[in-house]
Image (tube, rainbow, N blue to C red; front, side):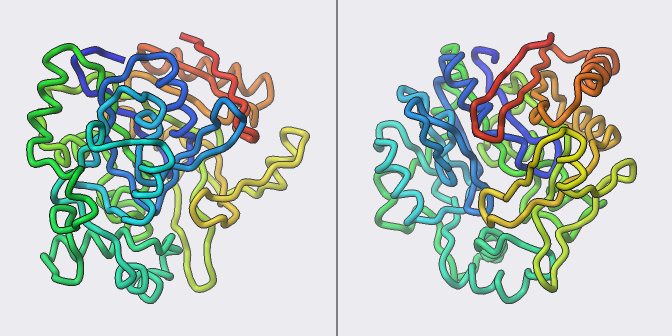
Length: 341
């Protein structure tokens, strides 16, 4: 990751590519001075600690939790569940000297959750209240609060976050911007709307939420899965289509291909994930539109040896990435990360 820059980690599919695990890897291998997040309750990032315990962060960014000297910024694009945030603050020992919250980060309440449960089942929403909170904020509705108006958050709310970020970058600090979910779920992805999330998912929007110049952009770290997933359908709801060069598979098919049983549940909803063939069209589009120059291909253990070689050739000859990593072992979080470029 580049010093004096905000390096970005983004999922180049529909989420669940293992951002938490890769952030843990980055935190262990780099000195990170600042980590920002626009995460919320509709996405969870997991990592395994040194004692073998698996953790899920929904409010705080994993790399910030694992970099105890870093500044953590919750941007204006985040929707906050106060109870969850305060729990993570206590669990990971993050104080006001480290955590800065944008005054306009919106607060999720029960009204937001109830609204989504009633109105968003048709898109198989996670129904965590994030989208409703963001929409009500945009409408300046009195039905929601923003962080500056919540007493519990006052020690953390800062109005000078852009200036703090720029100051850290000017002194050569290393920044990491965590973008939740995946580019295929962007609300502005015309191919899949309305079966998408409530916010734009791209590098430029993350910078807009921070209100800092895009000239601070460093490496763009893109994650992709060998078999992309989408959240599972619910009764009366459909989570959406995929790119035209892909098709939906079953976990039974994948289990047969790799010679061992495998089935995945989503981190937030615990539904069985829908799973698909790798889409070169979608991958290449995401790389170009977001300027991805570092790639982590996860769930490589779902490929046979010959398929790994084919994928390696594709990534190394089709693109001009600065770095490429193969990641396997996500089933039990004992990751093997191999740099192939």
